[in-house]
Image (cartoon, rainbow, N blue to C red):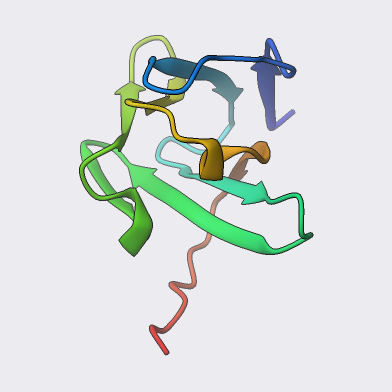
Length: 106
């Protein structure tokens, strides 16, 4: 059964600090694509990061403050935000797929 598990879904952190959003996965596929998405308070849905094996890529707004810890042996794909800003407030979702369609930049 393929699944992702997020722990500590509700976190309140101070601006300027670091937060790690935890995600683990289990898959019958050896190299699943992993993703982080978020829904902001204005209901704007945004792609945040994707990763496969040792490669990852973030959205334009992630540069410099967002990163992922992709721990292959632990099957983990944690999102790290540092330093946190108020505009990072959102509901974050970890997801997995065995197929990838990269969105085009507009």
